[in-house]
Image 1 (cartoon, rainbow, N blue to C red):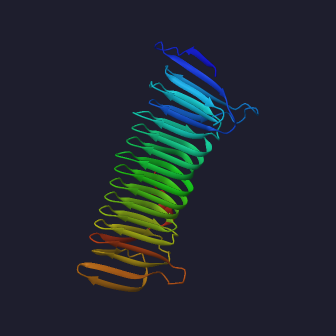
Image 2 (cartoon, rainbow, N blue to C red; image 1 turned 120 degrees about the horizontal axis):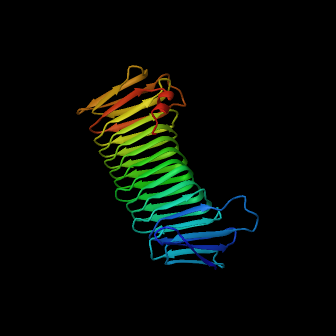
Image 3 (cartoon, rainbow, N blue to C red; image 1 turned 90 degrees about the vertical axis):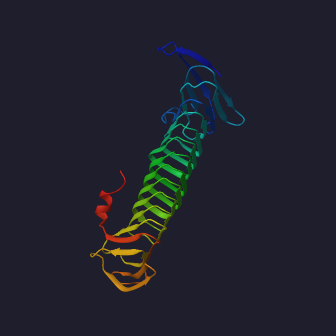
Length: 333
């Protein structure tokens, strides 16, 4: 291992650099109190030029490469910023404490694991078989696309804001913070929050959403959607989903559909409000104890009707007409 010390050129601080020859595949394990950034080596480098390059501001950093384990370990007691360049296929295991932030970009690996205390995690265009991100008070931000089976947990008031998620299985939870994503493509997804709102753009596949007091908004659902909340409101646009099941104990439910949609409906609440633009067939109404349940078909019944069920104990169910173009214009920014 070669250590080179160079002047930082400001306030008398120093930059320490390491250049480690490594195998094409391996693992990067980072334990730091300060901010860390990880990015890939130049893909046009010549064959056999795999390196892990480390630049750190301040002293106290320990860098070692275990050739048998094919692991580069970086640890420190100080809080200086660390910049790491590694082969794109290196697995990542990064943990910071305090307000230490993490930024990872353009990596393609088998396993990506990031944990922070109060620091922000920024993942930019990551492709990994598994992605695990956890924070006890920081933000989790996804730029570009996150591809892989994803498990994200944000405690306390931590928020999750991801542009695009794609994988076989997606599991995201928050406690009091916002959960927001613009595009979600997965065979199976489970999103939950205690008190935070869940705002989703275009979602595809089988998805389950749960909150206690937070509101749920889905701009476009294509697949099976099950959403439930105790006190929050639900607002969903259904384009060509299969089975839609929406439940709220105390909040209202708004369902927006294209006027041409063919579906079987079961709507139940203290009040059911159906837009005049929507044509219902074979309607049955069953009022009971200040509660009403309406069943029927949108447009002409057929064997391939999707099913939309909405139930609220104390709120109103609204069924409104909205075109696909309107849903695109209103998507989560």
